[in-house]
Image 1: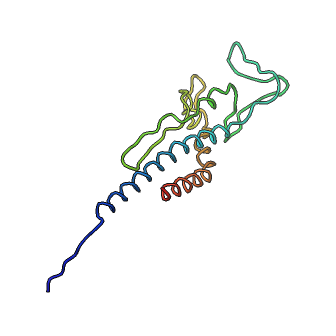
Image 2: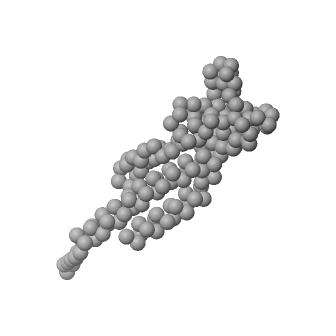
Image 3: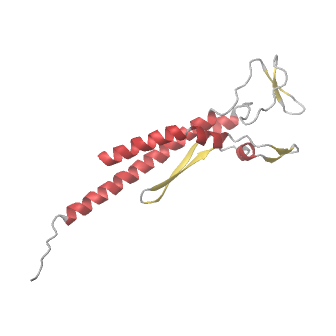
Length: 160
């Protein structure tokens, strides 16, 4: 007794799988792009704000202080906002496709000393500084928003 199997609709099935893979890859791209912006915004929120008063810069040392506030020392774990240059430099830099459905974004500061503030380390003549992990804390504080974004993007991908 011979059995015969007839497979119909294979091309349609393959096309459907390709469309789902494309939708998933597009969702991953959107998640990585929007997620990088969320992380950058969250990292910017980690900085301790400037005090009120007039800002002064020492001609001799370059140190910054504010009139009427006394000492304005750093208070871990949050970095202190002095000029605002580091905070303003935090942004989404690049989104790269690593393969089908695999995406990567690079988010962080473009100022050279951003890594020293994040991780601590040697500085010009000041010895070793303690870390102020603004980016790490930004990622941790953005976790809930990133999860919501992921759920939203995957739901869109399934509907497409």
